[in-house]
Length: 226
Image (cartoon, rainbow, N blue to C red; front, side):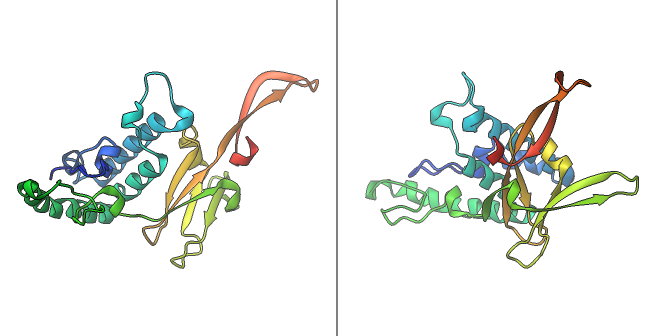
């Protein structure tokens, strides 16, 4: 199934934003876990490449830069099989219309996105997924003990779909996303998402005499603590 790029607004598809192709995901369709890992790696790569705080010389050019909102929306859609299927169907159904518009170029400029000329089309911005941005301190948390006696802090928040703990994650999830400074968390019962922003705070350990030592410890905290 081909990807589609909006000629009118230069709006990229979600596949283009994450540097993926439908065929690459189709190849791993029989292994949902492998597909999820592929999309997650692409999301992390795109976020590190285009994040304003992560930019490095020789990184993504301004002309090819995507916003964090675009990257998050792409991940939120493509990582959910049902949303990805609906998105692929929408892309596919627009292909004949694009061809028809190309045949009618003599009647006026061709376009494929929603715009002032009145032509109907499709772009990534037409496929919206609810994403709310929150700080780690805005969430409730609780400490649980597993079968081995290990304590773990888990953060959660209710979703407007009605699930009181629709969004939930643990310390391991935050540690995995520590280099990004934010974690995408999908609701367990619906298609809504949270983008949780947090900071890794480094603190020097003191030696036995109360003076700063050479070791450092890392703590997960709010972005407000930066």
